[in-house]
Length: 372
Image: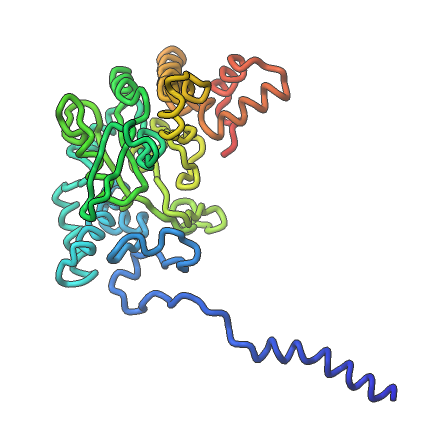
């Protein structure tokens, strides 16, 4: 009996192992085509389940390895990303020839100096003492208004007859004009799809002129096709991948505007699409429904929405003044107001009992203490 029980236990213990061994392997997305002529400069696609936006864009929406394009063709980072943008344009248009031809077309456009994001962009950005990048959705506008159709600045009717209402964030014009008056350049960067974003921007007029055509206000406009992913083998990771900084989520790279990251910040409500916290000023998402419903009563929420962009530019002006009086970089002067810097300011306030003013001053004087 003991021998029989021992035999049964041994069999029962073995069964799960046998079941696991005989189970089919889990399903995975198909690997990239091995004979892809662009494989050497293309990042391997992530499985669809990792990307909630997968399938949102028609065509070949591959991500190129930006560092590889820079090395191979002598492009700046912005030029290399423009290759990706032009490639996607050709793909969505269904141009003849397939990926290899689309890529060659994109290369020739960039070599000819055709940057869709704006004319003379790199020259202007190179000369700027500082650059402020503004996100669009839930930062400079909210285009999810359904209940308050009577409270909007823009209305666009699409091909299917559905009207999109857009409310601009209070103080947007003063914010852009003040940044320019302080000597900075303004860039708009949306992660939203290219075509609907451009349609909304062209409906947004300033003194009767579509915003993209308004001289002296916005230097460059970038949309979804300028987002990047990054391999751990780029930059520092090329020599030692353990030092690399992989970026898996399609993200906005501020090195497009300043490779050193000393002169550029971004104002954005969504840090999940950003990976440079020393340069990121988080902006509480603008909720136009709440703004429209509460502005007449001047609730704290409505007042805060009304003052949000003004506060951001007050910080920028404070940083510019500090930089001019004390030297150093714009980003070091603005650091106390960024995601990374603000946490260090709070750390000093709570831990050392410093006032906000004293903590801001300390962070500006000791920017290396702030960890990303």
